[in-house]
Length: 169
Image (cartoon, rainbow, N blue to C red; front, side, top):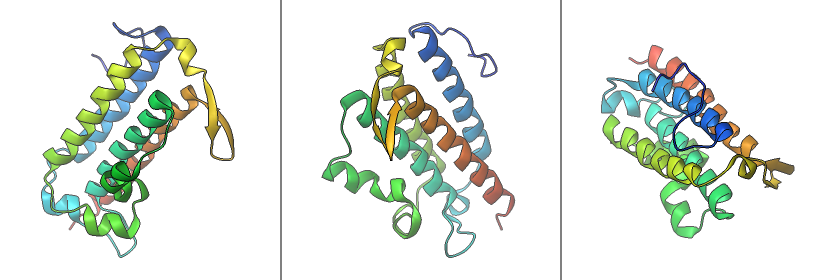
């Protein structure tokens, strides 16, 4: 697929296809930003308050996972899921401690596995589903906005990754 074309995609309704196309572009640029990084580069902390590139990749996957639960299952993470994903979701000190010592393939596999579920679930839904409203933050949002948020969160962290990569020792 050409990441520079926002268009209909086989297996998806028109609006979901466009969302998928944009999410695919975001993912392509994220993966390009981390290509070739070593484990020590993925674990590098710029300062005592920063997150590592590896932690940011885990965060991107964890946000997508969380929104799968919210929009596909109508629930938040349970205790077991928080044990697995909590450090990545929250980032900060827990992520600095727990999200280390993994090669790039660990993070790319995590991203791929989570995205496969998203695409499988998107294929089951129609454009009308995107406009389903649900409580979100201080108010109400529709699923379209929530998935836009997943994408813009990834792009924001991709910017952090690029910044951190330029400053690697």
